[in-house]
Image (cartoon, rainbow, N blue to C red; front, side, top):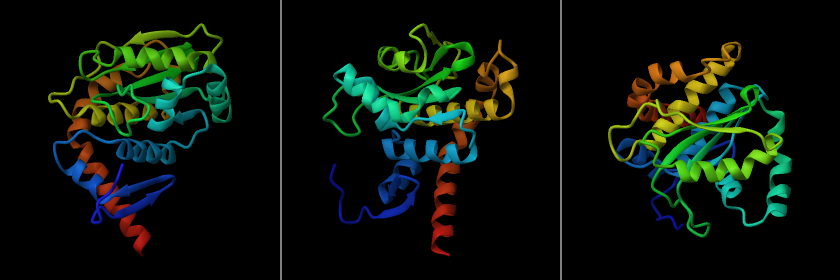
Length: 225
């Protein structure tokens, strides 16, 4: 993907480089791109520092889902140490073209919780991404369990009210689940995080774009001091 001369880099954060156009995406009613998704997941990993939580970047989740052969996938996944984590969070995108950067039209969230040996798919648009989520589940499942993990669609996931906030809902749900886990929610094995997601995500999603913009501005300010 090319960048115009005025699309300056504005922030380097961990392994993510944000550009001025990313602020425009957050400011308007726009579909979130890979960089914004990766940035906020990376930020969540610095807030929830437990090694039991792994937030997987979009590019890695995409490659796991679309890797053409098992041996290459095995070599790719091994250094990630996925079996060492109790909670794995994967962004899911419906792009099926490995040659198309930042393709796709819908973001959702796939979560693996080791205690339940289950994958949970949260889709904010009526299960539109079920096929892509199952593809990722089938690709990654042998590397996090003994191949006996269960796949579940979370039908009571809060639903977006427009055609562009799927990425915001992905990030809001990821934040709530990380907070649930870090707050000792693992003790509530039956209900898991589902009530927290239903009660918290709608309001959080409404304000999350502004919160991410504020976070970016604060980090830019801190780096310039």
